[in-house]
Image (cartoon, rainbow, N blue to C red; front, side):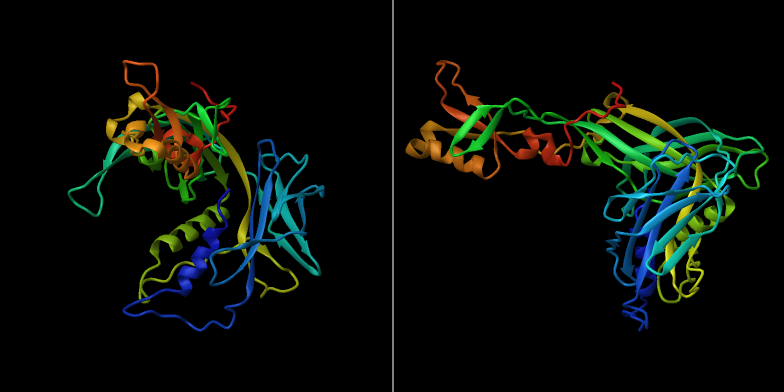
Length: 394
């Protein structure tokens, strides 16, 4: 799902355009709250999700809206109510979308009802392949190129398939640590051998850029070498193994124009005298009050997915970006004397990890300890999780 902040960011940027000096228009509705809807139904198995929030026109951060009566109706009159799985997030129970069938979203909020237009799930093209190539991209610094992995997609469709597409991708990558610790600090000057060393984790990220494509005007309904994400080595993406799940959403022409307008508005906002962004239309409205604006889109899409992996051996060394963990902190009895143990536990209380005992090589009696930074010994300290994904393939 796309982040709802896209819609509010757009409004905020439009309202805060500037030229030589700040320009802040006086808006009569600057405190008005807008409903924001982000919902989808596809031809793949659910549950399908509808997110509802609201915000003022000049505030980017939005607030989830609870206790909305949310329903999805199909063209045959069948209606399913969605349940609120978390604040502002509503999910279906048993609904299954079908190609060439139309659906609409119904929202009831007190005396107000909001309806989407009827949206038909288009027939999707087949994803032939997702692949990548290591490339250098120019930056604003002419002497400094940026190395990364450029992903591409090829797909083809029949005459029955739609000619309009939107792409999302989900990143997952495996990371480790330089100095894995097999000890836990328990507090109260106590250390024990850990039962769960945290030296291998997986990290997730869902980029929110708008990526669309069309085969309109082409002789064949074929996409070739369509550009997806350009992924750099930040956050240790390629130090072990990296996975990209590409999602291809088949769109109707009306929804394609919605995303194109939103994309152009986000990219082309500049000075006060620049070409004004296209108006981003929603397919939701309040039939009883046309002035009651609502943002977002209820999408009906054919969905296809394909996953690709990248191993560390397939990318250049400059993409191996790890935190600085080349040296351990050394505390010795000789240098610290009577405060040796106090110094150790002070460091552990402040977040350092106990890596190992320091031996002289002559005697089995330790002469000190080796400590490390949290991110060098515990992969969860880097925003990653220990649980291996069910789909992960080595």
